[in-house]
Amino acid sequence: MTDNQEKPQNVFNFDYTREAQTSPPQDYYDNIKNKYADERDVRLGYRPPGTDGYTSDLTGDLAKYAVDPYGDEVAEREVIDDSVEVLFIGGGFSALLTSARLREKGVESIRIVERGADVGGTWYWNRYPGVACDVVAYDYLPLLDETGYVPSRHYAGGEEIFQYCKQIAERFNLYELAVFGTTVTSTIWDEATEMWHVGTDRGDTIRAQFVICANGTLSKPKLAKIDGIERFAGHSFHTSRWDYEYTGSELEGLRDKRVGIIGTGASAVQAIPQLGKAAKELIVFQRTPSSIDVRDDWETDPEWAATLEPGWQSERRTRAIEGPQISDAVKARRAALSREEKIRRQENANIDAMMRIHKRIDEVIEDPATAESLKPWYMLMCKRPCFHNEYLPTFNLPTVTLVDTKGEGITEISEAGPVFDGTQYEVDVLIYATGFEVQQTGIYNRIEGEDGQELNEKYVDGIRTLVGIHSQGYPNLFIMGGYQAFFAFNLTDVLNSQGEHIAECIDFVRNNGIHSLDCDTDAEEWWVQEVIAHRGKTNRNQDCTPGYYNFEGAENRRQDGNYNGTMKQYLGHMSHIRDNMADHFVFTQR
Image (cartoon, rainbow, N blue to C red):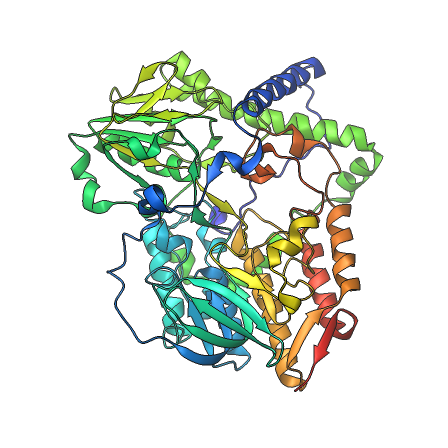
């Protein structure tokens, strides 16, 4: 167990340089790829392509799905009219770890403005039963070296992570100026004062020299556009707004209830086993199955924890960034392969991994038809991979029913519950596990830079940034977790590197008599071309079944996505920029 605890997680590492002597013929793999394509085309044949099949405009009859069930009723307070040096929009890990880096640089005036009633971001909002980190906690939880904290489990639970977020805020004195229960609605650059004027839904006006958009990659809940959502006569809520007042803290309120859940993504995979054990009846409505691999979880070995020396997490992070060490023999074998052969072998290795997941489904699920419905027919990593040991066995319970909509999804809800293929499914409560808007910078907030240009209007002709953090015409504005940045399965690695970069940039401004910095057009164009050069090398994105990794199957410009180089390359680019600030930014002084 100790050896396992010391290994950073790598969920997608295939050695494609060797082909096993017993590998199936290529026709076997080609037939599976054809099956993948058929299943993708089924999905694309239903509803409009892309994100048009969802809505995050949770107003009117849908407003209840956005209400915060965890915080107390928002108390009246004085309207704020003041100035701070650094303002964060959002209070999750992006804000917490960047604030820690800023504190190390001596920055005192830091304000977090957060829609929820506390820090935590996704861990504040997502408190559904069974919620846990699906990345190894020793890698995922940031600042473990600084705080001295060691997670209690290999995969930490949501409540532990939420409490850890609060611990970080306390340690770095972030509560003092923080404002909760408040949504930023406008962020306007004032050219006369060269300050950002930030407005909120509470009538506040806050001036800030630096603004950091830290609203998270998955933070605004969305619903599938289903006819009749507002007609349902029972109780309903989104997984990120779990109603424990209705379900009970231990789900005891569901013992006599027929429960329906729409969606089988990452949140649903964790919640469904708990619902299956608690509810009188559970009906799971599936559009596309998730890939479910084994979850190797255990309590942290206290003897192992006692051996940890200062800097242990930093060393793990360095090893993860460096990636697996490749021998000269493997390098030589790779170099000898043509591009086409590399792709073929990578795809075959991926298929082998997915067929192993299929095999596990056959071994666990008792009903053959249910087993077939739970098999994902797409390349591993087309959709976020899931890890759980209780999800599949839940479908063997006599009280649990899987409704496989075979790619169509639920399109109608009556007063009694969902309707599919002419069958009415009556439920007492309906839970929407339909996800979130992905990597949106101004999710409740209009951001206007120089000349009054709104950020999303600038992006209409293609996203334009420098390393996904800076955008020309928006001085002293920093974006975290957005497009054109590197994206990793362990997102906090990326956020940590971005936080370090932002802190260094602000420190440069403070120590060099500068008031603002803005990336210049040449630097921005260079990065756009870097993003384009590292995207579209294969057809993998188009070949994938729709999901948020590929914009739900919509076509998009090559620059409108993440930087697909390596993490090491991304860090190198940021380091080069910081070493040559004058070559990448325009400065103003006051």
